Amino acid sequence: MPKSRPSQVIVHRLELQDFEREQFEKYMEAQTWQSYASAAKEAAIPAGILVVCGVAYIIADGIYDFWDKHRDRLSTVYTRVTDPDIERVKEEGHPWWRIFDLQYILGFKD
Image (cartoon, rainbow, N blue to C red; front, side):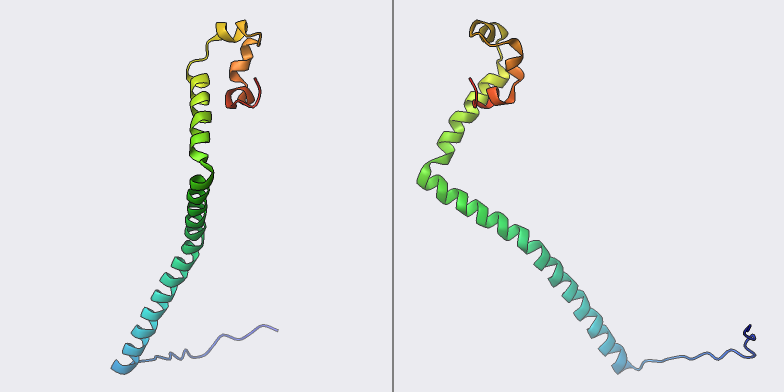
């Protein structure tokens, strides 16, 4: 059954006094700060994980000298990557493509 068109239009208007406006502004400011706090909380979780991992690495490095071992490994990798002498690799009995082998570069295979 079709609806009939309205015969009149009634407009309702809400007016706020000074007190209601002040209360509404306070509410909006509280909502803004709540959204800032929520964003800070969401960003604090990954930042906290990074801090904990960094502290754990520093402690482990102090106990087990991780950096010295990694520095030696990285210097070997750097030497193999930046100065790949194809003739030297051939003389050692490795095929030429070994200079592109990631396990060879990282020192897992000789």
